[in-house]
Image (cartoon, rainbow, N blue to C red; front, side):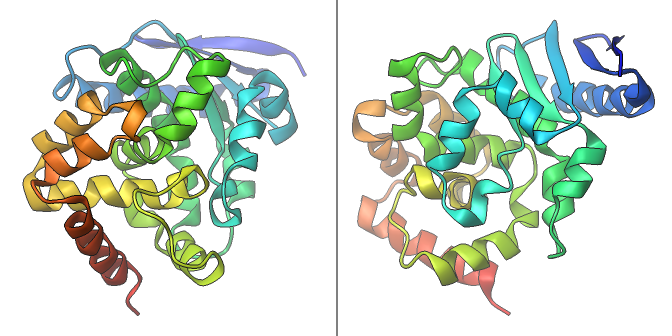
Length: 250
């Protein structure tokens, strides 16, 4: 199948020729999302390449850090590693591939279809936060793992995926034992966003934006986390566990 390009104001998508309409719709959604981020962040990347992969294997081959990140993730979250990011570009599965990847549980499809937003959110966060990637190297990937709760959690929160992750959160709570706080790399995709959602509920969006820009990888961001909530870490953890209980209550 031949590959072609579709362009919008801020993005250029490279995709299979049969995916032209889907790629155009994907870019339209990314443009709307970019406008939302312009109201929140000082720097919002433009001229971004969007590589749309029709199959997961092609995505993994094009983004070699992705399989490593997925391996570090608990089973409940691996499905949601459906894209990756690098300087000036994001790699995503096609909408049809995302539909196929979704499970039958409520919210899975909706969360996965927001994957392009999630990957672009990484570029926005990296452009405004020196401690977060891109770019990637062995040292920055180690930093990514230390701050995965914030890196993945903030992207999940900004992309609007957290409300659709209830089933994945339930699975993680049932399968993985008591999660650590802040969530380690294995829980970052599923649980990281809940930290940001709780912070926004308690202290507003500005507190979330301040947290994303002030985290120190040397302490896993715990100093910025306690400053954002205005409580000692053990009190923040108690609030977070109560919040997880609310999210998973039947």
